[in-house]
Length: 252
Image 1 (cartoon, one colour):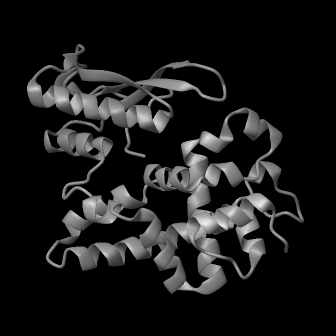
Image 2: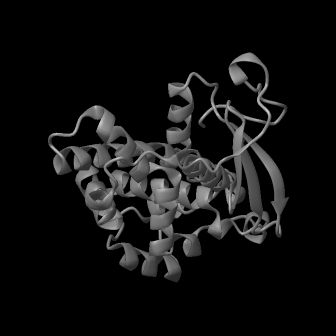
Image 3: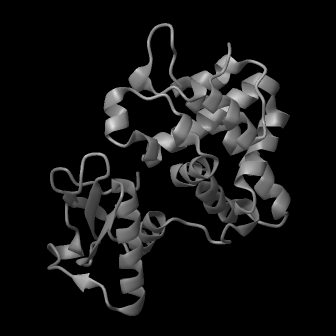
């Protein structure tokens, strides 16, 4: 399959030239434009997530030979989560070469974090299928670069850290509620409030609901550490506030 000019340039950017070019085309094909003869990248995304995980697990074990599983797990999560994949995608200009349906393009699909993260995983799988694990590993290590050595020793994300804080004090999991959504459809802003069992809460705004939840959790953790967190009336004995409709109390 002959590649378009933008995909040929993209190969140069990532430092890898495909033998089976149809794999690259599939990796950049979003479900919004897929047809029976033009498969999307979802199956590649599934595979790429596993390849990325193995590469990162090996890299972390090699980087710190004395670390225990409990220390490695948050570092691993920080390196493979969607936000990290999307950051890599932006650096290599992956969004510029994605094949999207019209509605996805109009809604700003080339900038969406989840979409970019998925496409990065699909790209990793495409290289794996084209040339094997060693070449896919080489690509991942090159694209992630110093992120691996620079990952924080305690790299728990804010939502995980807040949930652990609540569990250690016998509270129910934090509850996240979307309180506002503003901005145009192609670039919305989400405002989320997080509430813990002692009545403390914080709000934050981000470019995605997931980002807003992380920012709200981080703000609440800072407030709890300094004693500045705002408090709402707690509910009954044990101070357990049940989730309302549309609220989530888990860490997904």
